[in-house]
Image (tube, rainbow over all chains, first blue to last red; front, side):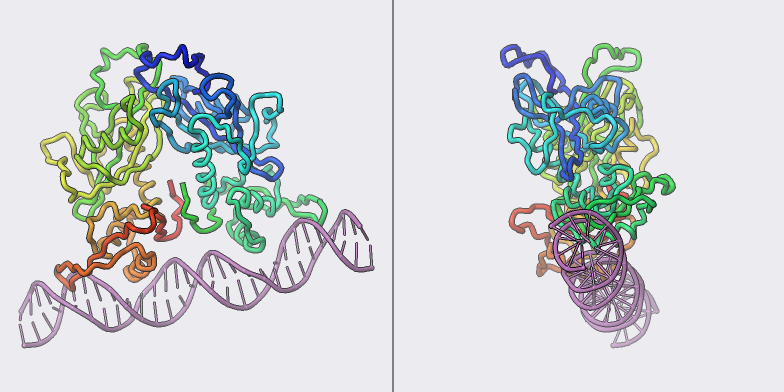
Amino acid sequence: MEDHEETAATYDASRYDRPSVTVDVVIFTLIERELHVLLVQRKRWPYEGFWAIPGGFINMDESLEQAARRELEEETGVRDLYMEQLFTFGDVGRDPRTRVISVAYIALVRFDAQHLRVSDESHDVRWFPISALTRDIAFDHEQILAYAISRLRSKLEYTTLAFQLLPELFSILELKHIYEQILDEKLDKGNFYRKIKEAGLLEETTHMREGRGRPTRLWRFKRDRAGDKQFVFRWREDRGDRA
Amino acid sequence: MEDHEETAATYDASRYDRPSVTVDVVIFTLIERELHVLLVQRKRWPYEGFWAIPGGFINMDESLEQAARRELEEETGVRDLYMEQLFTFGDVGRDPRTRVISVAYIALVRFDAQHLRVSDESHDVRWFPISALTRDIAFDHEQILAYAISRLRSKLEYTTLAFQLLPELFSILELKHIYEQILDEKLDKGNFYRKIKEAGLLEETTHMREGRGRPTRLWRFKRDRAGDKQFVFRWREDRGDRA
DNA sequence: TAAAATAGTGTACATTAAACACTATTTTAG
DNA sequence: CTAAAATAGTGTTTAATGTACACTATTTTA
């Protein structure tokens, strides 16, 4: 929906008898212990100069999820990631050019992943910390972002989604940090250790990482649990704002 | 998506450069203590004679939810109901005529509501108990139904959605019955009484209903809780199959 | 060598869940 | 008329889980 060639002057609504369908992908990552989201800056009317969720039209021969993965790869060079459908936004006036229906997806990427090539400042693509988003957000994308964050929070509590943001080896306190970032609240260290270990999701390794204090043990996420690639892990009770 | 005029012979894919967008509404109700879903029988190719989730194309001047409500009203004559977006289905081959993207909604209606006019056997519209659906289900609608039921189950646990299926006055054991129908498992009477009362969602009335045994007290759903029209009520723990 | 920094464990108390036995009030069968 | 059946509703006990927080452990830094 961001790459029509028309302007306010050339736009002609009567050409369209069907809505356009786009896929927008809200891409999250963790940069320097903070949750960030990827936005692209618009170069044309409408919302010129504003920041938008990356997305584009679907091709006739690809599924919605395929379209979302293609978008993601175009923007970040990353493939094979956690991705889920968020919601479909279809209010009438959300794009001034024409009727646009956007199927929104959420994706989680590791910032340290191989090719993550965006985010040099010269480009029109940038990572924003979710605690300090720009105010210049195009279309209804602010609403989509808010909903994406809320969904992320609620799914965090009963899925293994947090692991998607971590490298292969990580410490338990790093994992706790991700939970805190996304939930935006402090968790108890002792209780976190206990719960995460009882859940049986982690595999101890012999690797340690040294830092300023006592070195920390590194763990790996167990993938071999008889095929359920994403079984339930409930960190805490419902918070009521579940998506 | 059910009302194109073409057949296999007349269909010409090249006319279409954009996907069609439909809204499909999975309508649930409780009939004689059993959960039912509304399906319509197709009269034309493809899937002639098969049963489908009611739905249709969106108009250019209505939002997705407005389209869903219009569909619902056309099928059942009912307005102003609980309705929520389920998922958007957009695989390439799901409709043999053309590329169709369906935004699916869930609706809950009270069977005893004013006009609920469908379901005379002569018509091509029928309520099916979810425990005994027909096997002749069109398109990918079986998958949509399965997903709708799964979503219904999981949301039941943390929303007040069950009340949508009850008349204004109801007994606590009737409410329990709805939970049992949707969750497909027995609940403990004593624990249900305790939890539902502690939740503070219900308002006692002076009305009683007489039956075969001891008469039962009738309750009303409290609507006045400072604006949150659908705040959280968690009946029990996560079951892992949450939508 | 002590303090600071980080990692990790243990324990006690409160809250909630689960099972199930019990009491209460009506209709129905004899 | 009375006992049984049917339905409604309460209470109690135990187990499981959540929460708070104190404690120990191991490293670097001053």
